[in-house]
Image (tube, rainbow, N blue to C red):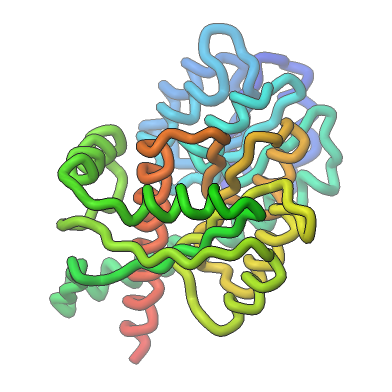
Length: 308
């Protein structure tokens, strides 16, 4: 039976969640986030549901510490008071699987948990088989420093496309320093040796970009939100159906909390970048997306290799 950790400072919320979930899952609940963290080193969880607004330690602070103890657990935030900045941090720093508003819909919560745990089970299976191949078959999957990663950028403003393309493809020692800082900040990040090389394809038309995506694979897709032909969420959801492995990044200066929640839950974005952006933020986000996607793809490759 899957084991779920619930963390919320309101005891009535914990009681309601336990009552609704305990028939399907093994539940442990804490009203004190610090006590929950102290419980984690000796107890493994498949999934954590955490409130955002808690005294002493908010949900993002909790998940930051929790993820260092149990990086494979699915992270879901449940809150009625999280603001836009909190949501942006939750997706950018923690890559939460879903955000669910209070009061929650039980059917929605049940479906979300089932889908999250099914996805996690497949990822862990791939990871385990991949490790077996690495250990027993002496697999060497080295990063090719000459490899060129493909990035698709969609924005109805040509000047924005030119700026993003220029900053992504710029070379220099600052990028190497940036990668070193990224690795230091996140010890779990699957870092590769050497610099990264990008080829950027740009479109002002989301429809044309989708047609291109049917013919050519991309590692990362960056999309604006407000576009006259098709909004960014509609585009990224359609793109996910065509290329589910491509990391999806939403970039916008006109996104509110409701839109960001939909971007997390429906388009399953990897990150959000606000406009105007800083060059470091753009390249840092792109680097993380590449590294995490490479790890998932390598695990899938090794899993297929183990079956041959």
